[in-house]
Length: 274
Length: 297
Image (cartoon, rainbow over all chains, first blue to last red; front, side, top):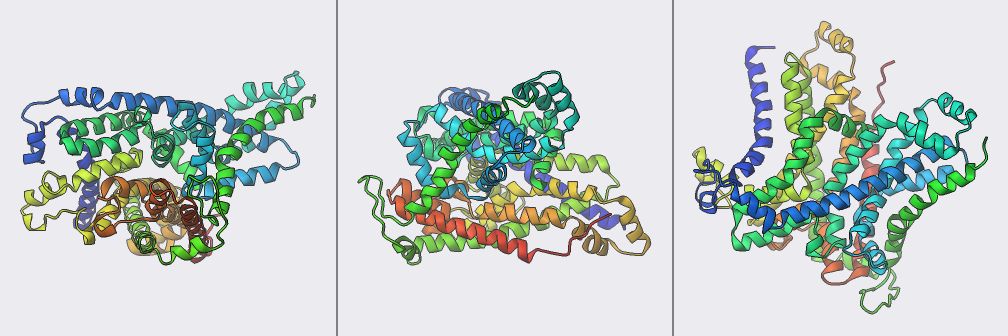
């Protein structure tokens, strides 16, 4: 290959990298400017770093509160779905019983249906149970919709684990639950981490479910809060505050990614290919 | 030794299945029933109206517009995304510079981590007429004539939304295809090279057939994503639904009919239509893209 084409190819790759990073960098820079600076010269560097924008977004624009709500809901749902998902996957993968296949395929079917189809009845189910706009209501719904993928992923994982260890534990007098908790679950750790990362990103990024099921502004999750903020800050034209909110919302996940990027990408691609 | 087996199974399976049944299965099942009713949520009374809702769909200009827009997205978004992702993955794979390749992959993946709401808000500001990044860029490189109010012009808005979708998706598929390409044994590619095959030929005849499974997966994922578009349109475009409904999508129609107008029966019919579209799409894509499977023994 000639040096020229090689150079062109590298330029194309670099161009896409710039396209990806530029909007993000721009948001960071804008979050440190005054509104006038943002308005008059979207491209310039701030004359002075206005960190108070971040404080304003955290306090007045309630980003701190949305972050707190998101952590509760996502944390709760994540623990719940990992627990229930690994139990179901384990039972379906390691025990023969009538109805095993039916249950498995019924669960898998849940991945194929568009969430939009369930939206209207789901709203009324949650409403009738008095769970609309509550933390535990959102946690239950999030976990329920993350369950099929979790079971699907972990089912394959539990199948591949060796039986010898489990049998030895049974002979030593362990109960079924004991074998699950103390032998199989620890052995499934790599799979649990992958699916845990996948679930975390999926739940963290939820937008449709909270928009429908979480109408109370005090309970807004981050994605909802930002969308609402984009509208309200637009009226008040507090652009710098909005950008600061955006950056605060992006930061935790981006930081986690930089630290764990290898596992995250491995987990996500493994999930997609299977 | 095996005592307590059924007790353990019951204890382990009943709570999750109950959760799944109540919040996932039952709503899906109810949706199919509600689609045949005129339920408005208030009266508590749902009358069966047969296929009336589905008949109305075909004369609802907004829904038809939504269908057209989702159709356009279905055509453009997967094609461009997969094309770009395959190109980048192939470029990164021909690795004189392995370190650079892995750095590129890390950066390309960034948008995948951002919630769709964040992406929507961010790009809304990229497109802002006066203080936005895009118009600022165009002025900066001496092309002020190309400045537009991207989301306010009916002809442009949908393309602006699609560009955002593609921007957000490409990185994930670069990583996906890269992983697939890395599993191709080096000696196969070397053999092709020794036989005098050029870069393009090698890609078309060897790389592409060997990663075709991943391309198929990508095709379906992106197709399903293109049938959505709800969050981007709801947050980014005015209305929401765009100027002259130029970015209306099915998800938004459904949402508005249900939660703004209270036409729950009608909205459910849209959901059912969407379901059958998704299903048809998946089956079609799997059939059309079916190829002789190439396996390395």
